[in-house]
Image (cartoon, rainbow, N blue to C red; front, side, top):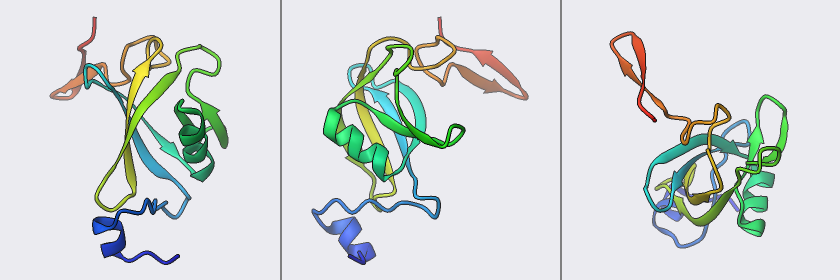
Length: 124
């Protein structure tokens, strides 16, 4: 189906708009604290796996394959709700994390703030 902008912006049908590389931006947010946990990309396979299992799956651009968040660490993201932006090319996943979201061990991948030209750690 060739969806029009009005179909995507005003309609009730989920019509994800993947970019030229077949990806959507996905922001994982803690469902309780609303802290931003991570940003990743989903292709159709990752989106379908997430919707089917209830656990966040992404497309790893570095590995060139599907990956389930936490597949090796056990720090999975249980998805409670998927929110879709106005033109359906980005998602927010409200999640319950089973441990740190960042591969560095930080709760969130966004654990630093830019102060001038320096990075300052903001997590504990």
